[in-house]
Image 1 (cartoon, rainbow, N blue to C red):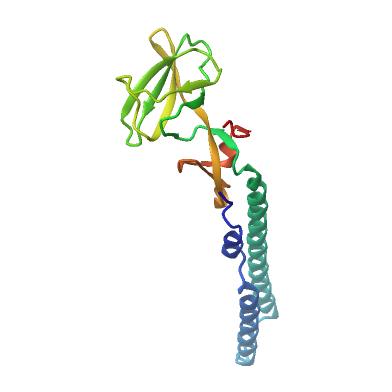
Image 2: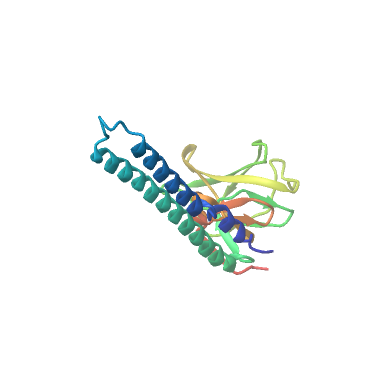
Length: 219
C-alpha cells in the first residue's frame, strides 16, 4: 500500500521550455520589426503609433503566456500538497457511496432512510446492473451488517455490488439513495482538476471530496 508518486504530477504540469521559447519568439519579433522598419516606403513611412501597438500586443501575449506557466506550476505544487495530505489516509477506512466489494464477509453499511419513511429496503445490483437482492432492513441510521444474501437467501458470489436504499411509506417509494459503507484506502492518485482519487480495497475508486467519514481499521 502506497501513495502514487507526486513526481508524475510535477513532471506533467511544470513546463521546462516555455521561458526559452518566449525569449526566442521575442527576439524573432524584434528582428521582424527591424526588417519592417528598414524596408518601409520612405515616402509613406509606417506611423510610430503602429509600432507601439505591435509592441504592446506582443508584450501582452508574452505576459499571458508567463501567467499561464505560473498557474500551471502552482497547480502542480497544490497537487503535491494534496497528495502529501492524503498519505495519512492510507490504511484507514473511508466511508463513501462507492460500490461495495463483497468477499463473503459481512459489510458494514450506513443507511440513511428519508424522513417520513416507515419501511427501508436495500436494493442490490451486480457489476452488470442486474438486480440480485432486495432486503428489508430497520428504518434507522444505525450501522447495518449486510451479509451478502441474494434473492434466494443464499450468499452472493464474491464481486462488486452497488447498493441503494429505497425509503418507502407503506408501498409508496419516497426516495432512493446510495448507501454508504466503510472500505480500507489502499492508494491515493492525483486526479487533475477533479481532485485526488482514493483507491479502495477491492479496486473501487472515489473522490476524496466524496468521503464523509474516516476511521481506524475495525479488524
